[in-house]
Length: 292
Image (cartoon, rainbow, N blue to C red; front, side, top):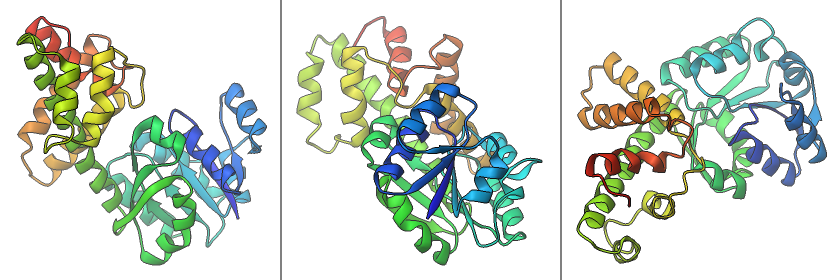
């Protein structure tokens, strides 16, 4: 089976390499010459256009920033829809608005092209070691056909319903992650201000009810002051914008999400948008005039 891959950024590149390691033939298209050379060295075939990638592949994966980019790559003139064969499948692993996923799925179905919206969670470290979590939306048959492909990149792959449900689930994930990181930030700022050793605080609470994957992934980065991006604040803000857009459409009030979105906006204005979202702690450090 030949797989096409579009979107070779922080997440997409290691995900695509894991597919090659699993024995899949990979066809890619990237505007970055350095990325093309690197992927060729790993065994990928580089193609100039999206249409040609789609024409060569049985399954095409997209991993792009947001809804407009995904719709452009898949649906517009020169997009994947024009090259994809009937019976082929497009898996969008980007985090986008559920309504956009449904629009894309409907357009592809009219061409007899399968579609899954399958956003991921875990950040760059888990993309590298192949342990991301995938939440997929689409019909059962398409999901089962593509399950081995997704499992080559992930530790967990769960079908959550029809097209759009994958990104609905990802919105829920991003609410929980953002608020979890904010809670860790507030807690560590408090204990630092009280004169307690935060390394000891972290080790004391991580095994109890306050323990979480977010705590273990982000507290060490906060304590080290290491904000090299595994998942950027800009991207998390994008996801929360999609959350609030969706909540407005269906009249669901989300006061905590609205609050943390404003925190991310403030951090972006301060020039921290390219930092890892562990840098949420900077907002609380500034308020308390203390460094964790």
